Image (cartoon, rainbow, N blue to C red; front, side, top):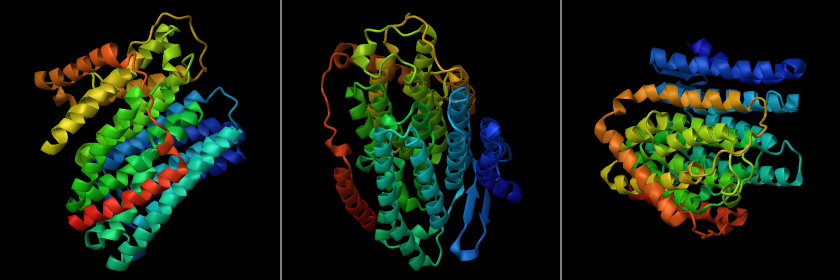
Length: 477
């Protein structure tokens, strides 16, 4: 299994090189890489035997793959495959498919890394690949959005790298477990980098601009998998070092509430989905021990919704309320919205029940409020008029959407014991209250929240404030 693991990590980068040698096979080679990743993830679930590899003595590289990693790898495989199918019959160049599989490989590497330096390398590679995909259209807007993303990412990694050096100074190792004996400033710097990279809390407000202004398939990749490169290390650290668990949970609750409060009032479809990415990342962090299953569900749902949003006649909810949507697209939109709201028969239900059962008492009320906000937000999609004329969509659109929705249905089996009367009644009640609140109050609400906090100079300021908060929390612990 050791050889298979190393080959699996190296394969996407090899395919990215081979694609340039055989450009006519670019789509097939990229899809092959995604399929192999999916098979590897399923193998992890079947064998259920964690693998830890230390390849270069005390200096790294430490790899850890287990069931938690498997959820994230499977998410990456399914979302990447769906994006490739979506772009299959487009005029995307060989460069696009090569960068997509390289991004896929670097994200997988970040999921497998269990030391701070190899994780740093994987995060930097994924950041560069993501930037190239964001800037792919080569328009002034895409270049500016891509550069903004790159600046924020590099700033985060500077903080992170200093923290990693402090961990090594304290333990002579870059292992995640080194946080236990590291000084408070090491955890503060490392966590700040990961929080920014993952789009968590206020420092994650770079995310709406980047995800909403990117091309549809790139938005699906960014929200579905790329942001999770900063989330899995946070979960891993919380599980390895129990003292860190409360810090991760606090940021999870704060992130869930922050994202949903913006999403409820947002009138742009892609920005609303981007804010909900922030909120759903909070759900993943709120219960680290079960965060993997929620990450899988969120990745499939959010990628589906971004692909569908690209097929809608407008990005503005007010305009969409006057333009009936084709029935087939509306049904797909409703299924995805049901899942993220926690409706039974889809994996979003099991993920929310499992997360709720692993919350601490002080988290319960806040996370129920966030769940209510989720139901209100996605009522905007569910109550859009339907019955419009058939809209021409990309040839690969339905293949991608069916793959992702199929994943939501099949993943529902993973937590079949969630289906008890008590577990079913609570999510349905929250959804019903959310829909009622939307129809009576929020449908006509015209509150526009300021976008000032999303500007780069303000984000840097919030990075500093978050750093101080992290230092205080670690010192107090």
